[in-house]
Image (cartoon, rainbow, N blue to C red; front, side):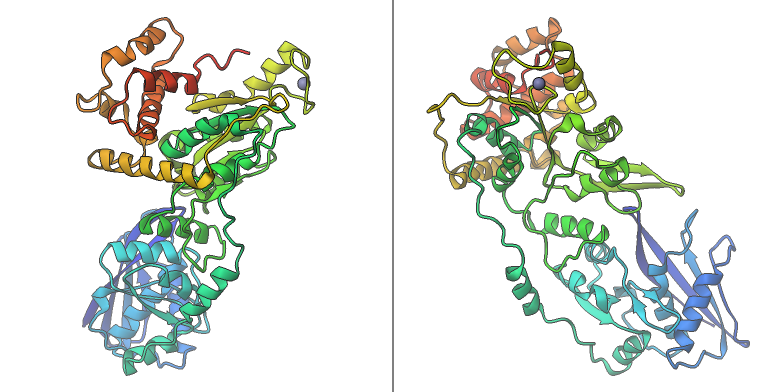
Length: 501
Ligand SMILES: [Zn+2]
């Protein structure tokens, strides 16, 4: 009896699992059974692999083959494990002589005709395989470009099972797509717009936007309807540094899993700006990542945020706080990364008319409108109001490139400071780390803040948010530890009484 095993990974709704395929070939008979250790059988898997192998012109081995796939629990066998099963069967049957089976990971669905079909999660799976020390991955040819984006892995791309056999017997690797084509395509693609300049009418909010970008703090902007607030998302994003290699693979994998064409690594922080009619399902996702996950490590811009359905705003509470999204599904739960920085814009009053000062909709109408933001208002770190400037009044700001350089310096300083605590930006730092003696802000700088908590002007949650903002303000000034002035500036940015109009 020959017995061997091969490991593969599956990804279902963001849930990564290692699956071990064991194949035993017993002499006598020509059967094929696929079971899990509890004895449940998987006729679809058996049929796919059997048809794929025999329709590839291979003779079925003269043995009894037993395939076991574990652990599956409540899962059915995902089709992406077919290729691993087929490789193990062909090896056990003596068709393939693999010495490196334990160092190779296989991903692919096998068609009844022996074709190797694409798996949408390939990029994420290959990245996970590389992290686990697998240096060779065998993937569907249609996913080769994605797999090649992961540094440090050898990619073998198959159109059909017969390619696997050719490779294993001759040692000649199937041809890969030409990476220079990717480069050409990347430059042909929509050019990354140069740094967006901040329009003069928005420039009074410039400092708040800079702090938001530097610390990745969630931002609420109230602006009169005639002001070009939609550029704020582009501007804040253009202040952000490029994603590093690991983040780029992670973000690209999410976009690939959502079915977007990914031919090159996503290097810039993504920006998603969904319309107000967006549903909970498309915002949060399900089996596939939703918009909040597509904004992972980038910006989620909700323009006219109070006009979104309350259940959509409510569904954002968890990802905005925990930086992941969990969705209950018929079988188990989906978990996706969702570290999106929120920018929520709203108008001073519900109608879209530009009122002159003191004029406009009734106070109750305005209150109702503001209350629609309630599900996410306690998630906002910075609240800024932009008023139409009186004619001739403008506020000189540094160029976008200069501001971006300051933001990059803050990100670096913060990443270095919090590295040991497991955080990289100021907004992530937990309350207990902020309370540690090393990071505690002197009482002389925070006594005003504590008084605000005692008198109910500031919640304890708000207290933590102000401290995190103070770190960013202090970093932007190149100071080591936040002082009283940094804390006062942070209070101004947080504006604890912003909910009363
Ligand atoms: Zn109005």
